Length: 320
Image (cartoon, rainbow, N blue to C red):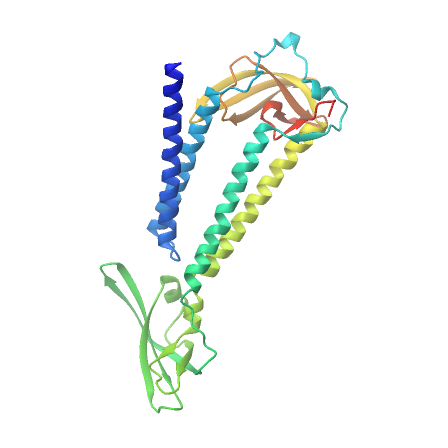
């Protein structure tokens, strides 16, 4: 009992440590906005490492608390499919315990992206200038460009001049831009200038102000979220199809190898009058070499298969 309690405390320490690393990474990402640089990368690494540590801790916790009613797997000759799988296809299904965990992790991952995009939007839009009042539009010409070395790295300068009708004479000015903006312009290019009529030295360059990381980051977040949603939907559809219409067959774990917080397995099963091999990974670490497990496969495509115990969906019992 003492060893079990000590193991629980260690697992809790790992989970809390992982959460702390994730929070530190989120703080680094927040402080680096709206720029994307070293602190942002460090923050993302902290979030990933913290997530892995939390996952490992949860896996260890699951091993300490096996689900009630778990029995040793039957021998291959005595195998019978689970009671709920004996119903004729298509079966009524519901999210399994594994599926609920999977959905929770996907939702958490997807929530991080809009939150990050919102923070980028807020940080980059808070200092925007309202050009509707008092500003007059003119055209500036870039007459020189320069890159200077500084203690913080290279700085990129654009030198330009423009004329105002209210105050005669050309106005010369310069501005610091990003490396991307610097590469997008050449000497002789023109820029839109908005200046105050009484004092043209007070002016803005809206084209440069609009070319901030905000749109790029937001569109990157939207694109990444869309890709993750498509990937999740493809996985969900596959699991749902196999759970509702898949053929149940016995499979024997022929290879099991630990890898990180999970295991890599190979399961041999009979389908379409030949022996096939299903390979995959699992994080519960409850599989054992030589176990007989239930495999679901598509009759029209026997090579597409899934371990029933790892499926997002489980068939509803006949009584429900």
